[in-house]
Structure formats: C-alpha cells, structure tokens
Length: 136
Image 1 (cartoon, rainbow, N blue to C red):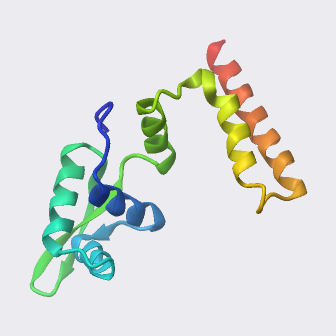
Image 2 (image 1 turned 180 degrees about the horizontal axis):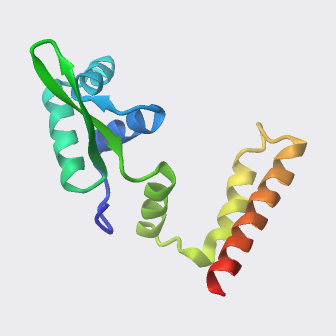
C-alpha cells in the first residue's frame, strides 16, 4: 500500500469483504456483496481498480466463469496494517501504543471478561520479545 493513502468508503467495503474471506474472490463475488449494500456494479469495479492501483489487493489466480475467465483478488495488506495507517493519519504513533491498548480495553468493558487481561498481557509480552529480538 502506498504510504499515507487512505481508502474511500467503497474501497474499505471491498477490503472488509476480502478480509472476511479465506480464499481469493472474483469481481462477481464483490459485485454480489455490493448489491446487498445497495451499491452498483460500477462502484465495485471502480473500487477494485483503485485498490489494485494502490497496491492494496492483488490478482491471485484466474477461474473459468462460463465462457470467460475471471480474476481472483486477495488483500495485500491486513486489516491491522490498514488500521495502523489510519492511526498514523490521526496523529497516533508508536509512542501511543500503551495508551491505545488501555483505551481499547476500557471501551470493551461490556464484553470484557477475566481472561481478557491475561490474553492482552501475553500478546504484549510476545510483541516486546519480538522487538527485543529484532533490535539485537
């Protein structure tokens, strides 16, 4: 993904659809999803073309569809990588990670359970260890 390139709403919808899927999808799959959202095929096609240009998705195979062939698309970036771009655009950088985690936990108090803190602590320890190993 090109640095500091935010996605449009239509592009985000395509990415959300791709992130949900385990396998690559065709433009037809995306168009059906957009139809459920009351969006046009043209909007889906433009969003896919734009995402290809921004290097957010890639062609990941081809399949036969009746008499023609359809390209299959996969995301190049993860949902978390895009979230990091959004946060950076809003002025939240690496120095804010601790406060961000605390805020996210605070926002999820309704669904928060006793094991959630331990899971977060374990994940953070893993990240700290990875960063320490990388700096050696």
